[in-house]
Image (cartoon, rainbow, N blue to C red; front, side):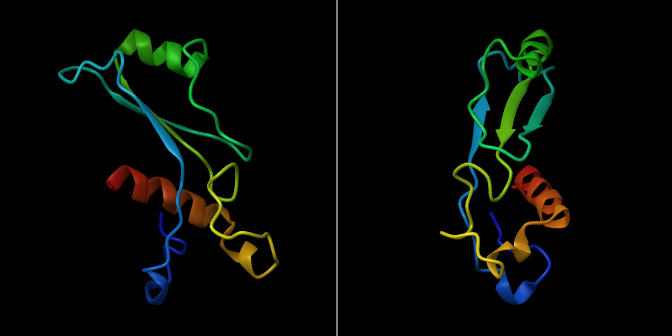
Length: 103
């Protein structure tokens, strides 16, 4: 994932953002694609018993789960110093989702 989606001089700075994909029930002719965004906390692979996944089963969708930057293993930096936290904001997080979908 891009560290800063809005500063093109930093476009080569990236970090690893965790995600999971489940295509167990996907019908590639009629099934939609769902993306579940984990909140501010460590994200876990989706459980077959979770409500979003049950809806996905019923609709035969392709199911993605995306971990929020700075949470869980999706850490851009090894520490949370004030200087490093400048990339933790809603604009960057929304741009993460956009970039993930387009990629």
